[in-house]
Length: 165
Image (tube, rainbow, N blue to C red; front, side, top):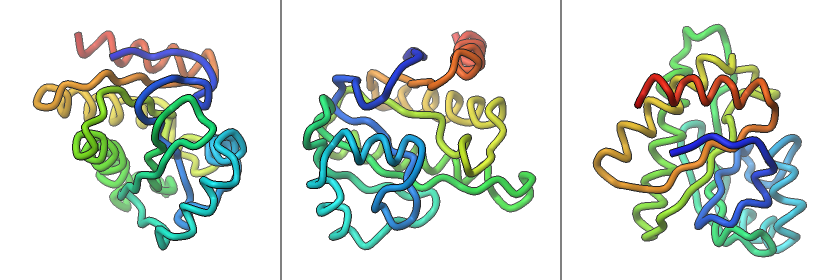
């Protein structure tokens, strides 16, 4: 398990996780970047999925991405932490990992789910992400990468990973 700084659309892993909106039809940030890099076939497949609820996940092909699959998950909007946001965010990671295991994938990369426009504080989100993934891979070994957009986010994820060693 590691954290790297980079562009998740460039990672050659079995699956990258998309921090999607509930329509799954593209948007800004990571979601828009993944849709642009994958090409229009991703949009057409996503149209057939009927959207996705917060905390759940759905899988598609990767199309023009180096990743074979995209796992789309909808993170919670931050409302101060009193509306079940932590559990919903943890579910994003668990359900994404469940799909990876169900499809016999061995490597997966996550962005910092819900920390962009959805406003989840990066420190809290990273703690939930790392704790949830560490607990999961104890039972189902997977090669997990946390792909961070900024140097600051990378520092936070690396510090969180260091506490789990």
